[in-house]
Length: 148
Length: 394
Image 1 (cartoon, rainbow over the protein chains, first blue to last red):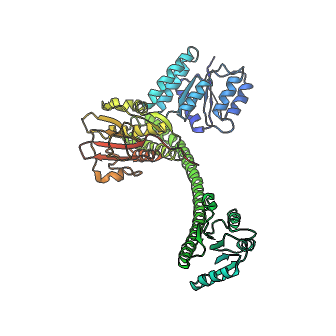
Image 2 (cartoon, rainbow over the protein chains, first blue to last red):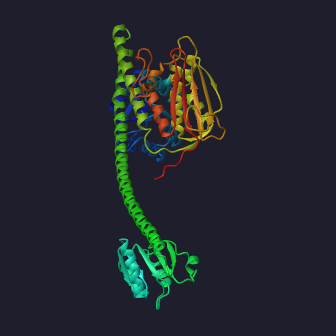
């Protein structure tokens, strides 16, 4: 069973880069993307197979990431999927609120692709087991890696 | 115009003659009732009032006119027989001035009194007019200022919004430039060192631009209504130092911190102030010499750099001293100016906003800041901040 990653982000460049790096890190992963929260929810609700991990941007038109997160966690079918916030924001308030609302991890989009490689390697490597622990480690690690 | 009131025509006549001789305009009334009618119609600067009159006597007239705001300030000279009724002394009718002259009266004395009271009346009237004009002018000016203020607030709000949006929207393309340039460098130019160097310069320049936009964004966020809270400066300092941990370790910097007081301030801004000043102290350290940064604070009596210490003073003085490269004090005003730097970006990184932000924060807190320094001998930034902030009166 190939792992499925869903990226919900309106930025085409970030989506493009994400896919590129993902292919490089683990070509077996199936990559899905949606341009905003509403589109993602519609697709998910009618999907035959659900993703293993959702990467969620915060600032999007129509339905932003925060609203989408709430909707995901309220939905019985979808709330078990780990959500990784993947955003340009580094605001402590955003971190606090999203983690409180059920996000598994908060990652500020790095400008250094090596950091993204690191992140995707970790997630892809642990998607079948211990993902929660791996994400916690990632949360701490990511902060120091990026600011280092 | 002076009003003469007496029930005896001959008395009125002689009074009139006396006053007209001295160029006073006069009017007469033969009874209390007539006097009242006239007083309510015309304006008099003085009333000479016979007390003993049939019908309404002098005191009754005085009492009546003291009830009307238009007439209660008119001075009155009572003409009375030898037994002066002390009623009005105790009654306290004094707003227009009251005096007594006994009959038969000494004309010279009467004239002196007339002069005094008419002058008093005129002066009081002038004063009231001036007061009214002044009050109106002040009101007009206040309205003007309030309107100008409102317009400025709106314009300021708009500017802030534009600055915020512009900075925010500028960051997105910049981020892509940095990310993809780095990617090109890593993936394709590792084996072409010359190209890699050029790309490094692209990335470095873009990073500088990003820092600049962030700093300008920080600066614009400093305007607007301040929200003060009681803050422990020691805690804010520690938080700022925690953010600078990496840099501090890099430079092996040492700190000597004294106990800082608690003051009313905006916590985020004070933290940023400490961060910017300490960051500078770390950045401008002397080569090969580990930075030693001393932060001291004490309460002082007045808002001045040389004020003596006072344990219950209204202000506090904080000094941040380093042993770095220092600067020539002739550039003191320059260092606080936006984008002004004393060094090229090759010598020391930075965009010249750090101290501008510090100065703005000090302004927001109604404080003072200065720096003492000499080249090669370190710098000391001295800040004065009020302990208490008065809430904004809207």
